[in-house]
Image 1 (cartoon, rainbow, N blue to C red):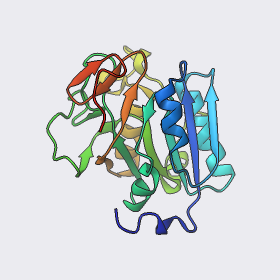
Image 2 (image 1 turned 90 degrees about the vertical axis):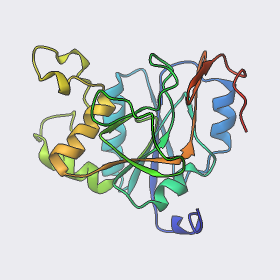
Image 3 (image 1 turned 120 degrees about the horizontal axis):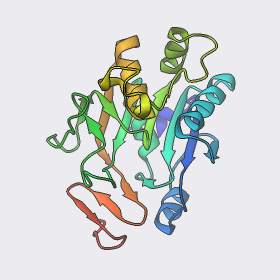
Image 4 (image 1 turned 30 degrees about the vertical axis):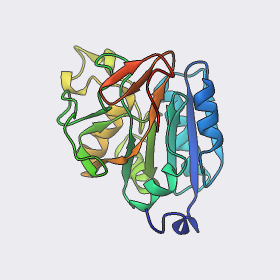
Length: 222
């Protein structure tokens, strides 16, 4: 995107890395070439929601304008962050696909529970929920959610609610990243976006791309 590198002046981004398993060589090489306009905060050994909330809290306390969440099995293009910044949106994600069933499906839903499989490549897609594996969040979103939640609630942004069946409506029993999206939409009235021009690799013991799921190296990359 033209001009995306120039807009970095004055931008402050904290990159939070959620580390959940052994890092692969492809991820390490991808991270080495990733342009990050700010420091990195890796977190491991905590439940997903606690890890992500600790990163959000640090970003607010240290005055960062954005948080960029990167999972240790998602490999974005080297210029993913400046391109996401250039969109100038509250919440925007790159595109990556599921490694668990249904594998090879983009990690985005509209409405909740329905995976988005039809979209225009290279476009911005308005979705209801998206994963946090390659996700940029503006500070105003973090501040807005914090203002809507009880002051003593440590889970102001992310909360794992998969196990809330019977205690909450079924449509609210979601993973921590999907729950964050629900709060952004319902509490703040903001939209969630996916930039489908930023195509990431999702790789672990197997690699997921759109419509494919195979051992690493079996899917051509180019």
